[in-house]
Length: 286
Image (cartoon, rainbow, N blue to C red; front, side, top):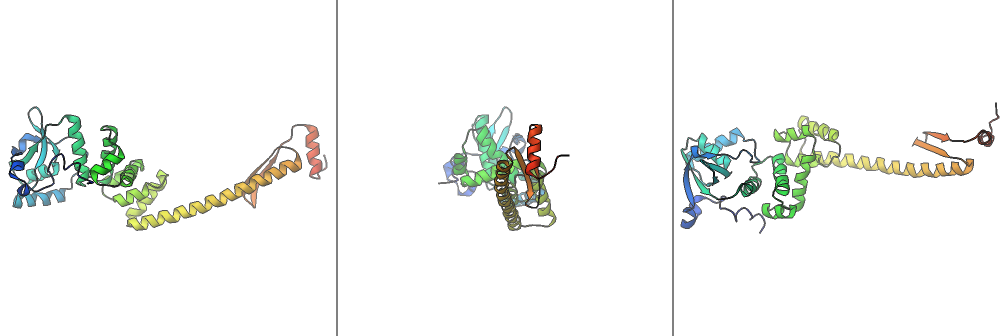
C-alpha cells in the first residue's frame, strides 16, 4: 500500500511495547553522549516549545519509539529520530533506545530524508528541498516518491513548485509566517514581485488560504479578460493595417493602444512616392 516504503526499512513508527520479542531484541540502549545528529539532515529548525513538551512526555512515559542510527568510527549517527534524541537530552536521560542499521552514506541519507518527510517534521520549504534531493541525488522519480510517502503525484509536484518562490517569501515560510497552503497558492504566480506583495498581504491582513485562493482567482479572471481584449484589439489592428497598406500602396505600421488612441506610420522610398501619397491624402505640396 501507499506510504509503506519507510516501514519496510525499520519499525520506527510503532511503540516499543507493541513489538514482538524478536523485534525488541534488535533494540539496544545507547548512551546519549555516544550519539550525534546528521549535520546534513533536511530538518534545520526545531520548535523549542514542542521540544519541551516532548521532553516532559519522555520524563513521564519514557521514549516510546526507538531512534534509528548507523555506526560510525567512534559514535552513532542518527538516521531517524533527532527530535526524540534532543528531547531526551532535555529530559536528562543518559541513554535512549535505538535500532542500529548498517547503511552506506547514500542509503543513510535517503532513509533520513524519507523519514523526515513522512513524519511531517519539516516545514514546507524543507520538504520541497528533501524531495528534490531524493530526485537528484537518489534518482527517485516523482512516482516512486509519491508511493513511498503515500502522497499523490500532483501533491509532490505542487510541493516542488515552492522552490520557485521569491527568496523573501521562502524566508517567510521558514519562519512559519506562511503555511504550506499559502505557499502552494503563491507558487501559481509567475511574478516574484507579485508573490512577495501577496505574501505581505497574507501576513498583514491575516488572510486564510481560501482568502488567498479567491484573490488569485479574481486576479487571473481580470488578467484573462485583459488578454482577451488585447487579443481582439491586435486582430482589429492587423486588419486595419492591411487595409491601409492596400489603399496607400506602401508600407504602413499601426500601433493601437485603444481604438481611440494610437499611432500610424506611413513609409515612402522616393520623392515621387512622397508626392503620390500627399495627393492621395489631399495635401498640396508646399
